[in-house]
Length: 70
Ligand code: SF4
Image (cartoon, rainbow, N blue to C red):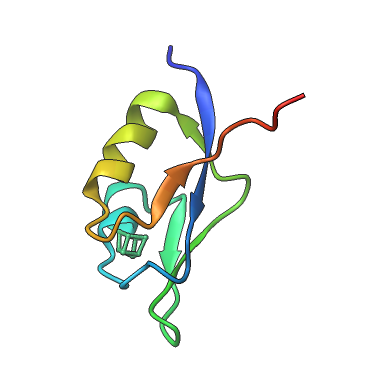
């Protein structure tokens, strides 16, 4: 199984296209009022699925959070 990573959405770049919600409906929700996606819960997802959803976002708003450097 693939390593789990945390996904984050840059609300300034999100254009509300909803591709993330289509791909991972349990992890993303596009707010009806703001048309900006939010990450639900912990935002954790297996790396292979995370890479797919990052690629699908047309505005490049989704990124894999790098672990904090020690
Ligand atoms: S796919 Fe990207 S642009 Fe579209 S709603 Fe999700 S984060 Fe926003």
